[in-house]
Length: 240
Image 1: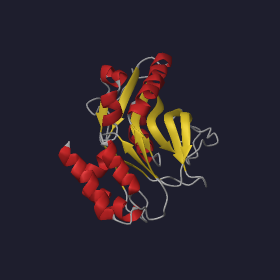
Image 2: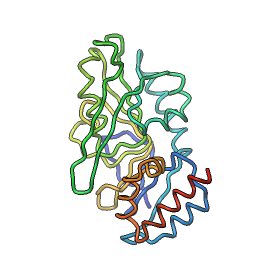
Image 3: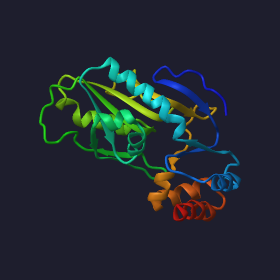
Image 4: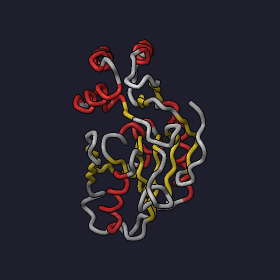
């Protein structure tokens, strides 16, 4: 694990490079279970890293404070389930109220991901008093979710620019200056990637616990004993 070169598309606090895979601990996972999971043999022999939400909270608060200080009449938007965790841990998000919006990413190995996104503040047709839409999420993988939100909603926010804030992001591959089409800028706590510039597998522990299909696919692709991986995260959930 080492620092990466700079990726100018994103503004970010820190970066890391790993040829392994990352699990974002947006829910508690006992240290004993973490140790057992790390001891499992992976399919490619590379490491398993855990990133804890406590590592991101302070930096996220600083990023959001700066965005709101620089932009009047800003609306914080929280897409899908992933944004629940930054929102839950951020005092700024809680105090802002903000708006939740449906968003979901469907993906199967070997097939391009498909993203769906809903309408922000659907009871209002045109929104003229918002000058900045701030989309807050936990992970930016392809950028498609943020892009789809902008595509479906930008015309309704007639005077607004769009900004993205996230805990973790893959190395930006979008052609837009911000890294994501439609956004003036994206600011993240940590950018991650492989040593060869490829994408690192990132999953949150909450998703692996809540979606058995995703968890099974993840375990079978990355571990020699997927049954043990699934048992460990399930047992920890039962104990909690």
